[in-house]
Length: 419
Ligand SMILES: Nc1ncnc2c1ncn2[C@@H]1O[C@H](COP(=O)(O)OP(=O)(O)OP(=O)(O)O)[C@@H](O)[C@H]1O
Ligand SMILES: [Mg+2]
Image 1: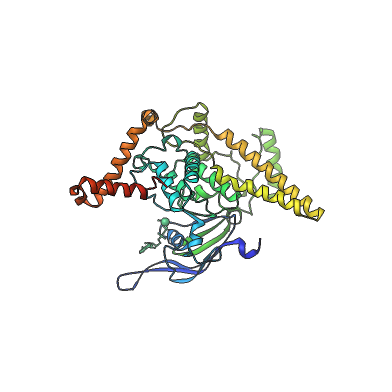
Image 2: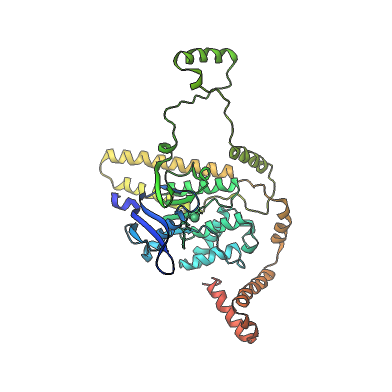
């Protein structure tokens, strides 16, 4: 693959000035930023509130025109229709049609990408499972907690199996367990060659997932680099050992004191961070198989994982057509590495598939959900579809029964009922 193809995003001098009604500059949201993102990279746009993260993302999506500068996505304009089809987007706020169920919502977005009925069904099932909403997939998203709605948003962002995934504050509203799952998902997607851009002001949420970050402040890049480049304190050393006995500690200190003064040294016990502690508590609850009506732990959708299978197949085919023995050996080695890591990932995933503890209050709702009859759901869906029509145009109520049923049929079609 050439150097040019590998660059997924290139921004040069990118700027956005919001103007007021009279065309006077109101806010310099983004002020001359340059950055490049390569294929397979997880790139973090960090910065405090109002630093220009969402504005940059909207320009990447072609939703806002830059005031100045150049921007290319897959070597094309962000407004190129084919480019848009290769992008998945999770907006800052999850906007969902509250009367649709989670499954219907994903199915609807699948229709926008003109997926076949069979493909939509397959992807919807896999995505619901992946975001841990399989058991509540038939409930209206209007009833969902903020974190559950966020998970639906994440699923819809992936329904088109995008090459570039743009996530604006993906962990907002998610409990630590879900944050960890989102981070694992992002890592898996990147391993499959997808490029991920994510924004956040919660640095701990993204620290262990991003390869490279830019830190924005006032619309300008204040720092840029890999997390190691930015966070490693190179002029200090940490040594971790089993708990030292008094004797050993005295010996070690004697040697250290020959080199350093007491003020330069610090002796402490390592401390778990609150996130690790929390995850440990939840994992123990899961191992007791405590039931939940909320979101559960899912596994990465098979169709999103399959790119790795195709990469393996591609590599195997390459080996067959390569003449050079040296090249054959190199490819064979890589192939074995890939197969081994896929096996490992499968084992890890299997061991992680345990129910998660959530609010006890929702248990009842789940059991009701499980016994609900199909006919009731159909009726409920028709009622739900009627409702927004009433809200949008109150005079519809006065129209004849016939008109109303025609309108509902149309709406049902639009909302992705049948192909
Ligand atoms: N449509 C708009 N009209 C006018 N000003 C805007 C508009 N959108 C954003 N801004 C301004 O641009 C600046 C950057 O906003 P932006 O939403 O990009 O910040 P952000 O980094 O995403 O912040 P947050 O972390 O709060 O989401 C802010 O000063 C904001 O008020
Ligand atoms: Mg924002």
